[in-house]
Length: 377
Image 1 (tube, rainbow, N blue to C red):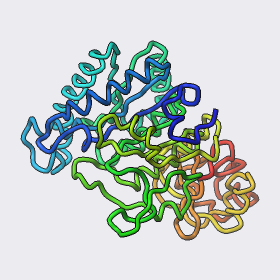
Image 2 (cartoon, rainbow, N blue to C red):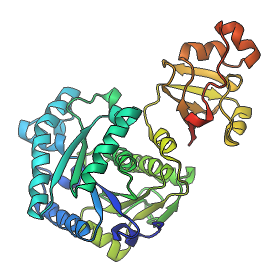
Image 3 (cartoon, helix red, strand yellow):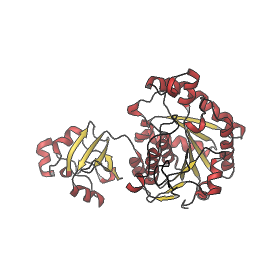
Image 4 (spheres, rainbow, N blue to C red):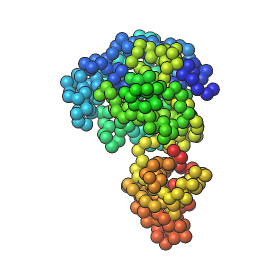
């Protein structure tokens, strides 16, 4: 059953599996201590949803903030990469213990899953994570997922738990994602501006919708902002997963959002198959291929990407690695797995198939990115 209203998020008939993302600014107060009373109320909501038959996955931030307080680090533990990694190492123990304690008080078992970008970007590891999540949910456990910030670096990390939540939702086969925010939802302009109005429902993320987003996180504790939430909505949308942004600052935020119908619901307008939704959700391409207008038109009709349509190659990648396909303005229109290394792509870009064999010294492949290994964005 389609999810097209906020009330469907807490209805097991519409939403069998729900991913709930909790940010640092909601979980940790200004002194670096857990907001335990607020968390207890949220966990009681989770228990109620579990009691009604819904499966729940929690994506929880807060490890760096909790660890920084214990280590007395400047800037919330984000002054340097080494500070963030050290804070995460200390804080993750506290965070997992906190969730375990609160869920156990409601008669629920918690499981901790720490993931890195590669765990969800590389296909085999993604399937392993998916299998683990599926088995935990079958067993009635509440998985609590976080990025493994103790080993992640700037080059190999999600950077925010909004997009992580959307990727976890794909892996868990979830029906919806709820992002708890510090605002009621997406406003039609900067919330600080007079006349800003909440947008209740969005059918597909467009350029007009992206223009409504403002960057940054007001609390200084988190790493996301409205831009990252829209990126998460796009990832979810490709897998046919609904996503909602609601205000998490209040006690029992899920009940409040549903009872008052207050939030922004992104209704998916497409539902790619499992492999394409995984491809479309990947966020770390190894390079880019800029293509001409004729190529763009062909791709829109379902064609594979041929070398003749490529006008520029950037990055260093090998065969089988993810590449982003751009138009002449630098906007991503598709992404997929390259059949050639970057070096060979540069050799044959702009060349027709009859010319490629002489350049490569062997018969060329049918495409640079085959349509079966590509998803339009």
